[in-house]
Image (cartoon, rainbow, N blue to C red; front, side):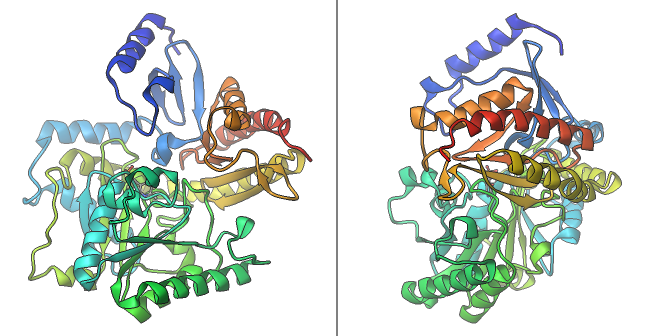
Length: 450
Ligand code: PLP
C-alpha cells in the first residue's frame, strides 16, 4: 500500500470533528482511517495492510471490491440509478426471483428494506397483523438491530438504554451447552430443557397473546452458538401448536456464511418469515429484506400491508444483489465457505486450542466461528467479565492489539473473538490469519489463572 499520511490525517480530522459514531462514547474512540480494500484485505494511509477476519461487520461475504459486482453497480447507475418502490423494475424483480429461488420452503415473496433492523421491524409487524396478537418472544444472547423493535428484541446490553418495558418483547434462554442456563450435561439434555423452558415461558405469558418467536438461526454477535439437533424443529412444532409465527433472523448467518445459502438448511426447518441483509449483496449498497411464506403473503392479498420505505428494493442495491448471487454461484463461494471451514479453519482452531489455555471452547461452521476465551478452563470463567470496559477489559484489548500488530483485524466481542472472514477466503489467507491468531492468543494466555 501507498503511504499518504497527510491524506489520512485529513480524513481522521474531519471524522473526529463531525462524524458521530455508532454505539460509542465519542470522546473515547480512535477510528482507523482506511485508504482502500480489496478481497480479504484493507489498508490504512500509513502502509499497514490488514487481513480482515471480520468481513466488515460480517457482511463482505465475497470480500471487498469484487470487480463483477462493482461493474454491475456502475452499469445499473448508468442505466437507471433509482426508481420509486411502487413500480416493477428489472433489478428488483430479478433480485427477488434469485433470492426466493434460494430461500427454503415456500418463502417466495420478498419485502425489501435497507438493512437488517428494518427487516426485523417489518417481520414483527407482519406477524402481529397476521395473528392479531402483540407479544414477541426472543432469546437472551441475541442481536436483531438498532431500531426500536429490533433493539428491544435484542438480548444483550445494547437493549438496556432503549427498553422502557412497552415494546411487547419477552426474553427466554436458548440452548448454549458451554454456558448452560439449564445445568444440562449434554446436547440432548440442553435441547430438551431449552424447549421445556420455552413452553413454560409461553404458558406463563399466555399463548393467545404471542404473535411471534424470533431467533437467529445460529446466533452471531452473541457468540455463534449452533443449536443442538432438534431444537429449531422443536420450536417450529411449538409455533405450529400455538399459532405463533416463527421468524428466523438470517441477517448474519445467511448467504453462505455457514457453508449453506441459509443456515436453516442445516436444521431442515422452514420458518414463516426469514430476515436477511448483509451477505445478500456483501453490503456494497445497503439492502435487507423479509422472505414471506405463502400463508402470511395471503393475509396481505386483499388487505394492504401497512409498511413501506422510499428505497425499498433500490435498483443499485438490487443490481448488486443480482451480481453477488451470480458471483457466488460461478465461483462456488458457498461451497468454499464449507470447504475452507472444514479443512482449514476447524482443524487449525482445534490445533490452537491444544496449545493455548485461554481457549475455553471453539464452535462454529463454514466461515462462522467463535473462540470463547477463558481465565480458567475448569471453571470456564470468561477471560473478561460480561460487558466489561476499561481496565477490566484489558486482556481482550491486549489480544486485539496483538492481532493488529501482526496484520490481522479481529472480530472481538466481550470475551470472544470470532473468525468470520469473507466466504471466498483462500486457504493461504485462512492460514495466515490462524498464524496471527496463534501469536495473539499467547497474549491472552498471560491472563489465564490456571
Ligand atoms: N440481525 C442480526 C442477526 C444481525 O447480526 C444484525 C446486524 O449485525 C441485524 C439484525 C441488524 O442489521 P442492520 O445493522 O443491517 O440493521
